[in-house]
Length: 249
Image 1 (cartoon, rainbow, N blue to C red):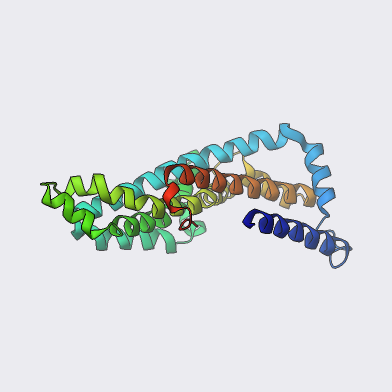
Image 2: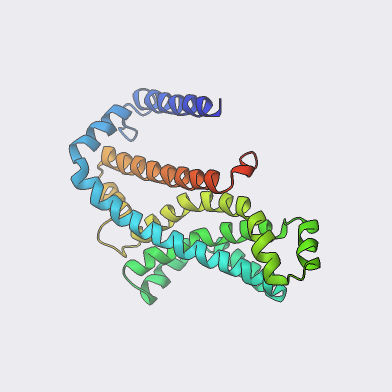
């Protein structure tokens, strides 16, 4: 039923897009029809979209792995050393509140090149996954923790056998949100001119050259990749945590 509702929503969105293109924005041409965008995408072909999408996706995946790996590592460290919680939380809040466009030029000067794109993708996912992992690790059943303690298990045993398992649903919920966020961070990094190829670079050039259908096509491809990333992580979450399907986002 949920899939049917989602399909209806997509069809309604495309219908609204088409209606606006032929009515409100018919004269200006700022909103081309879906068919015009598809024609433009077919004309550009894989030779244009393939390499650009591959560059952005590569940076997004690297940022996704680095940012989420660091977030999960910090969450585990906070659990083992509770005194670090305040520092970790403040760090996460700062990474979430600082605009990427504000720190991007600084990172570009310091790191330069492709590292800037990966860094912005990583910082885009850090907060969400860290908070999800912390909440999950703390949601462990108290009776199960006490049972491990009674049998002589220490802090590491409780973490391994109880807390990590209980943290999986919440952590995967953060990872699902992180997948589109990593792509967005990578595109913003490319907008800053830290790369000579990618979806962000192509979007900027298309806007400057007033290639409206291509701009919409690039945005559509970026949205599809983001949705695919979310779906892949959601599928992995269903396989790894089948007991929590009703709790997943």
